Image (cartoon, rainbow, N blue to C red; front, top):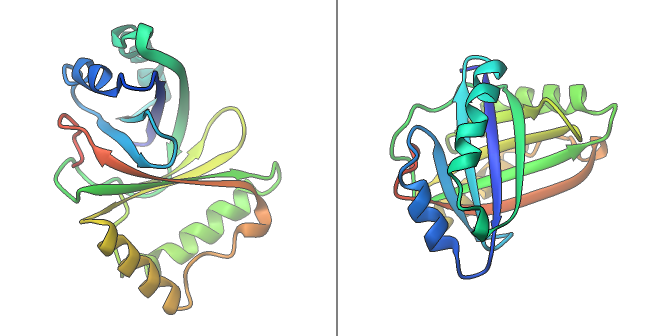
Length: 189
């Protein structure tokens, strides 16, 4: 899988269970609800070998959503940088990190992240790393953890190693972080 698409759904407060119920009928993608970060949000992740396949199936996914419960939806296509973990059980919490790059900083951000990644993988697994194909240049990565204690330990050990985090702050405009919980139908859980 060389490409991915995220659908980030901001949902009317109190209606996340209704949207999650509708999404339970959609298979073959990652699906998480935000626990820490932007509340009333569901993040979906789909993979494909081509951007065209993602675009051709996008309308079906969007039409299946309960629009009466959506405040906003944001769709982004991505190029996958790292190997993607196969569908399976990896943890009860996932960390989504998304960085907005300076216009001329994406190539350097990508290179520095990928150079530092092998040392980081000694402490925990990476579900995937992504670079946006449209809109504001963004770089994202998604990490599974057993729980929040596992996350804290892995991150602390990576920092102590001196090889993490990658030295990319000077190439970024904005950094966001969310803790996600997998929905029942998520292919990664």
